[in-house]
Length: 498
Ligand SMILES: Cc1cc2nc3c(=O)[nH]c(=O)nc-3n(C[C@H](O)[C@H](O)[C@H](O)COP(=O)(O)OP(=O)(O)OC[C@H]3O[C@@H](n4cnc5c(N)ncnc54)[C@H](O)[C@@H]3O)c2cc1C
Ligand code: SF4
Image 1: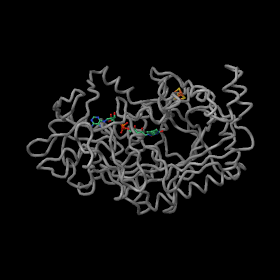
Image 2: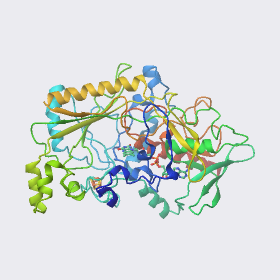
Image 3: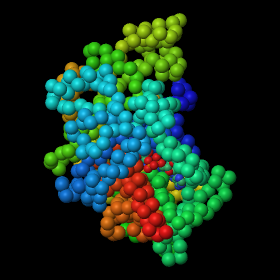
Image 4: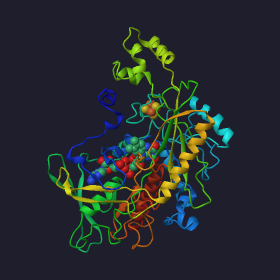
């Protein structure tokens, strides 16, 4: 937190450890800045995530049947429903049933939704004219005290980190597991997995501690949960004479079909002040453009942002130098303090900005891969991951459609467009998916519907890496639901075995 507030820093740098440990390559048309998309720590990338937690829609599981695109998942939305309920309860999701486009639900959300913001009300007028329905956003953020954690206190720093713990992060469950007797060995990346003589099961995970010593951990069951880049990397690093192409890779598909959602954003200026207070997260979306009839454009998730670039607290913390914000230099170099400064800032430079962003549906393509770059090594001498990320015709057409909708809304608002993101070189949402896809056929998939690898009977993968298609929704709730389904399966099989 302290680092993120420093004038020389940006919130993107906070979790960037840098150095050899995190070396990577990016070889696709679109640069994939891997280190900004992940956190290697206890709690993982949810320490940094925004917490938006929608379910996937029914159609996301049936892309081949409905549109002849990609492949169907081997499970349906109905197979995941009970686990979605558990995931929402465990993570603590705030939401309400005001979204007419959402898939069917069985229970209320664990907490009420956050109310719409002031700038949402400006968007609402324009959207009503255009026939666009806005609704609340399910998020793993406490709208009231929940599970021993605080309600949201509006620090507005959800990314890079929530200081009040109102935003869920996975270290919550690490602490629960530890209190039940689990042992966490941190700062100890697994270097490779070793299998038994027949190559039917994994025998040990070899990990290295910071002193450079390697340890060998044996177990009955292994579950990989290291994200959709480090999982295929670890499997490829675990090659052996029995499996020269890497572990669990008899299909040759480990590392194939990488997916992540590109972001299409637009910022504009209104005539009237929005005076939007900084919140840290958005409070309205529309999923009206999600369940498409035609093949293209694909699904769209559209966000109405709570834009506040003139957040007085962060400007003040970043230093009162005239160069920080030219238009506020009088205030920041003057003698006033506290509420007086705040009022002066608002009067001198009212926030008139407004912004939207959207994610298009992402489909699996063979051009998008995670492979080993053998020309570079990490601090343990292992080849680094190379991410090849490219946009296909489906994503491109859907991104253009998002831009059209954004233009319609901004035109209705009479807003002057200040900035539009690049459609050919977009920022990426950090929703890593694909790379060890799920299926029933061992020739065309890496794990089965229980997320057990086809090749090794005691190896499971719980990650966005098992997704068959990427939809346009944020993936983490679905990752958690799948993980709970697999945990249930492992529990039941062990009971049976005993
Ligand atoms: C800025 C940002 C905003 C986001 N916002 C959202 C959002 O609003 N909604 C949403 O759904 N998703 C969001 N995401 C994505 C979300 O964070 C991920 O989907 C989620 O964290 C994935 O969980 P995971 O457990 O699969 O992987 P991770 O959270 O990445 O965890 C992987 C863990 O594995 C560990 N690990 C890696 N390699 C090894 C190894 N060799 N040995 C041992 N351990 C290893 C890492 O240290 C880490 O702890 C966001 C991501 C970012 C970066
Ligand atoms: S607004 Fe503040 S308290 Fe609320 S989740 Fe974000 S960082 Fe945490």
